[in-house]
Image (cartoon, rainbow, N blue to C red):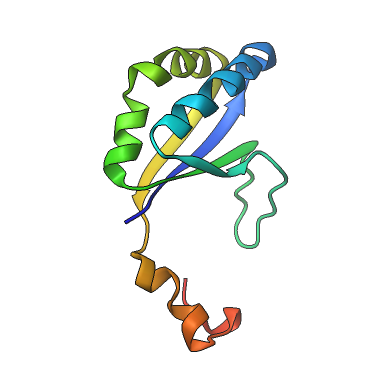
Length: 115
């Protein structure tokens, strides 16, 4: 079952954070992860949440995500992130494959799908 790392980042040292952005991707890929969202514009559809920077990572499992986060390959990048930004990060379970694709196979519309 996939797992997701959801990250809200507020960068206060742009130069150091740029170095982080160079180091992090190889470590993520090494643990089977990939970026689904990396920065870009956000729009609040409800409430007032306006993250300055938003990142969404997908991993094959919670174990892969945890292993990446605590890995020696990510340690140097993590130290740069800690030095250059304030971060809030969540790890969450994804849906099993059959549930992720249920709406596609039944022809359900986006409007009728539940969150």
